[in-house]
Length: 195
Image (cartoon, rainbow, N blue to C red):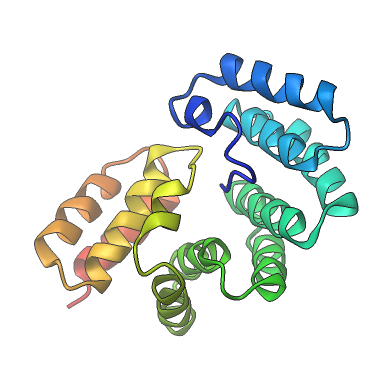
């Protein structure tokens, strides 16, 4: 998921949700129209698997936010839909996010992951190029906040594979294949079996 402001982002990354939520609620008290803080508050709810509450806040951001706010909300909504198995809805939200600003790497990373899960090699190759071109330094990838460690492992395996780091990619695919999410385990197994 994408943090919109960086406010409380260190707390969120560290999993200190109560501290993050306190900072975000204080920011919203000072500025009730602070949609960036509202978006990050939604992220904190998603990290607790309170997906309905997160979705409600993200839809509010989508309805009232700037284009950047809307892009963040669309990426985060896309991830929520993907996690719940609504891959078509996820793809629609992520494609809309990418259309807002094709120069941002976050929607391209999300579409790369989604294409890989769907077994869409052409789409995965396209979004790989777009993500890596938009994020030459890797900074955007580092800033992504994932609800589950397996999601980050998936990204890192794809990046290693795309960079020709066979050993690194293989070890990450093996770890993912042993993970708790059957869909990602199957994706990892497919990568391990490919020549």
